[in-house]
Length: 88
Image (cartoon, rainbow, N blue to C red; front, side, top):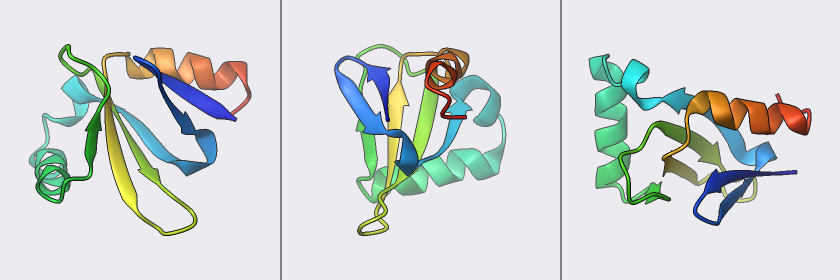
């Protein structure tokens, strides 16, 4: 199954490690440092021109490469979409 992140961005649900709310998670320094590190390594994919409301951590099974997607959709919206396909 696939999960639509907005702006024609779609990812395979089996690659998803976690979906996080930007406002709630970036309060903690460890999470900010994680995102800064991922950005420095060029592993962030932005799927919105607006301020991101969620980030999705993914790992591809075939090569163990880590990617983080920034989406304008709320994490709760993404959860509802995944629940519609019984992905949670």
